[in-house]
Length: 251
Ligand code: 21W
Image 1 (cartoon, protein in one colour):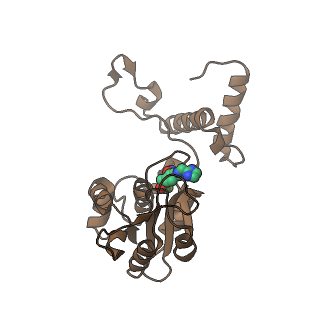
Image 2 (tube, rainbow, N blue to C red; image 1 turned 60 degrees about the vertical axis):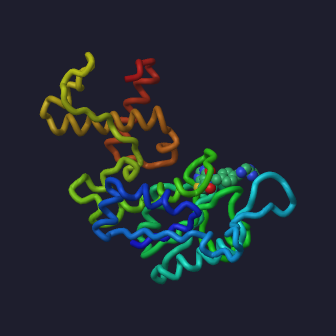
Image 3 (tube, rainbow, N blue to C red; image 1 turned 90 degrees about the vertical axis):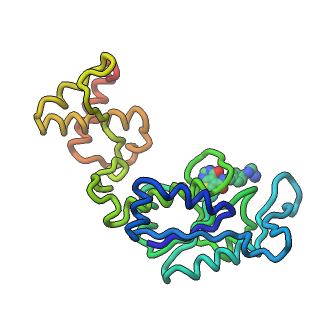
């Protein structure tokens, strides 16, 4: 997959891609990431990329000419069937389902805004969809672009290699992960749960699923509401709800 990021801070993108899974995805050629700087599409000596908003008010707006030129230059390097996505606080919320959709594309332009954002006509002319990574205010689209790149990269064939497949990731199952432990058996007085040391594989599987269901219910009930659970998970949730109704302590 080929991704082009339109950004005023190309080093912010390049620098973050050197490490871990992303670094190896780039090295192996399974993922390629390029950048396009709108400043390289200005004509004035000051290389101006922003201007005051029509209608007044605080903040600056990204000038349309360099932004659209940069988007078109980036898109021209990608195969047919690629999409142009703008990272924007006004976008649709980014989810694992969207990550799967985007990872299936041959290429992607990611447009990271700064200041108050893009001139609306650039969105009309040069953007296919807008994506937000969550309900909090950031100072630009670069970190969201990196978030999207990270989520897509781990879905590309061969990228996770020997590590557990992305199929195993908890959001793929719609549940939060269960607790993890490694040696030592006792750490600062806290023991590893006995079941994990028992060697009983079926018991361990059941315990992990029960932990995942309980955590999801307590921390992120929104992930469970209106969803059909696997029968075993539903049974564990019913047990949990019955126990809570009896006034049991939380585990
Ligand atoms: C944030 C620019 C807020 C402008 C109403 C009118 C990309 C982002 C961003 C940014 C404003 C994402 C205002 C989650 C994010 C991003 C920069 C609005 C005040 N309110 N996902 N004017 N959060 N943010 N400024 O911030 O570019 S994806």
